[in-house]
Length: 111
Length: 115
Image 1 (cartoon, rainbow over the protein chains, first blue to last red):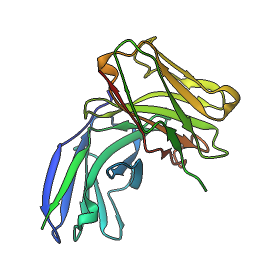
Image 2 (spheres, chains in turn green, cyan):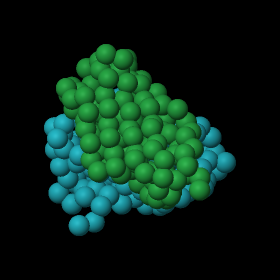
Image 3 (cartoon, each protein chain N blue to C red):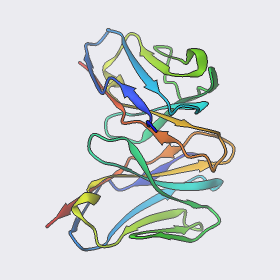
Image 4 (tube, rainbow over the protein chains, first blue to last red):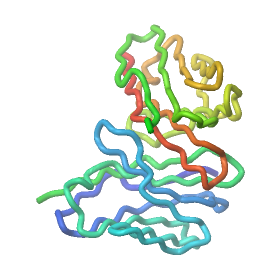
């Protein structure tokens, strides 16, 4: 089945790390994505990971994939006010071109 | 290079009226997708065009929705007649190919409110 789940809200203090979690159900997923949507803007692809990888790091972003538990996480180090946005977890498998999204996690930063 | 553009950015209509959303993909992208996010829920796939042909329209909710892509360039999504539950944000995306390596680039979305 197709189902991607994530928590709706996360609040962190500026300078702390943010960890946004996601679970997915489709074991045949080949690509897993994190998209960011800032207010009034479109969806921006932040990073992605192949399903045969465990971890990917890109500057302040770290993606961890636990295939056994079907759990994906996005860690943002040294969270800044500009990181305030909605973060969508998504998956795609090789037999289809559509992307399956979660409901999005709204990240808010407090001073 | 211009990104995916969508028009209008916002639309407010009354139940029973007709609305047409437009999407201009990135120049040269044969693949065009429509998605929507209803009531703050997940973003759901509606359909996929390859040039002017509908490759996958499995996500279209019902026959009140009509998508076209005449000439394989821009696309329109018409909702007729609109219902309250159609309110949400409609996203368009485009990609050069359909392999997993082909990124789908999203537009800013059209926020549709049906009163």
